[in-house]
Image (cartoon, rainbow, N blue to C red):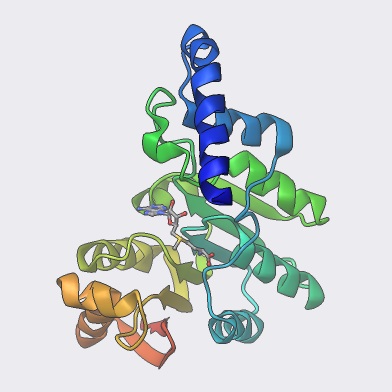
Length: 237
Ligand SMILES: C[S@@+](CC[C@H](N)C(=O)[O-])C[C@H]1O[C@@H](n2cnc3c(N)ncnc32)[C@H](O)[C@@H]1O
């Protein structure tokens, strides 16, 4: 009863505001996106992480063991994991430069935000990190395949959590390989078969699990661990 009452109020608001939205030429989603980006700088998922706590531990342990000069996260979403990594860096008093690349809300034509509004908003994530007193990071806009154009230093530790198809993981890791320092570590998310959505990715096209296994077979990577949904790989020079 309450829900249908709420729905009808929402429907009324939508109807009443339609002429205004039409006159300024923006859809509801576009307006919400602008409101978040320029007014509230917030989102319900801001600074959330997609990782299980055990997976975060694996990533932070890898960070501690590697003590990287350059760290890269590929696929950032709303920034929670990236924030955790920068915080660990600061706890360890390291000077690691932390890069994070995503398509954000920026690689979309603003006139077509049907999908764009579902994307993390780069400026909102940046502000949230700065508000927590964090620095020494760079949020890059691009596809994973653009890393070679955007980062000139050798990467010592990378976390891949972007497109989870078999082909995308193979392509991204092959492109990352020459950009990594010798003995660098790469963690690949959703590379299991046991938990969702990994099971589904595996059944669809082999997903990150099969990609990791095939890459390891080719002899350029050593599989150090595969726990929960996280594979830890070491580059074999
Ligand atoms: C699963 S989320 C990342 C979650 C995040 N790493 C975390 O731990 O919370 C995937 C992200 O990858 C981004 N993405 C998907 N395909 C991409 C690509 N080819 N290049 C760069 N980013 C991509 C999406 O925009 C999305 O923000």
